Length: 215
Image (cartoon, rainbow, N blue to C red; front, side):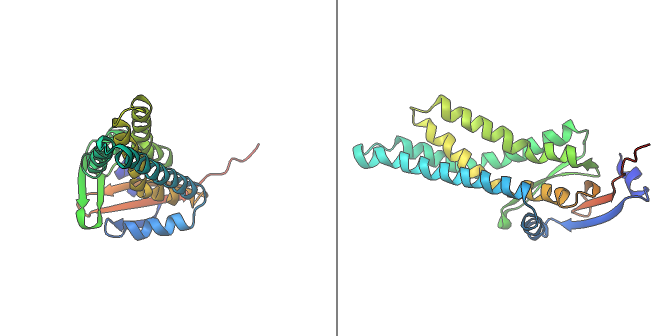
């Protein structure tokens, strides 16, 4: 469905529209009312935090015992990488997922004071199934690559680089999971979403799902 088809489809009604300044409160409300995606987000974050704490403890041990700081230096490098280059990588994965879904007018934005970074796919209409891929792609890919790095470099200082990425990246995913909660919190509706760049807004439209009637 195109943007033009959607706005002229009388079955679809606007459910919500929000600017990027409103996203954080919007996400908190949706996560609070949700069980499944919210639980997945909490589990992912808990796993990440525990992994980072374990990695930090493990990195400090050689320093305390032998005054070897290689592990700590790699851990610090992972932290710096996560809060700089990985942010760009995370948003690029979102953009590639949008591109794979057919979106072509992609724009990047940020609000550094709120530590918010995002991709806008101008007037590209996507449904729940497509949005799941777009939202989860960075989490799945970055988790896989960081876990792979942890396995490959388990007995080497570079292990701490990858465990810090795995752990801290879990804090980035709350927004993606929160937007998925919006769809899941309204199972009776067929929901689509799109961005309008010139307005700086994200819209959600929905219509009642058709019930299959047995003949």
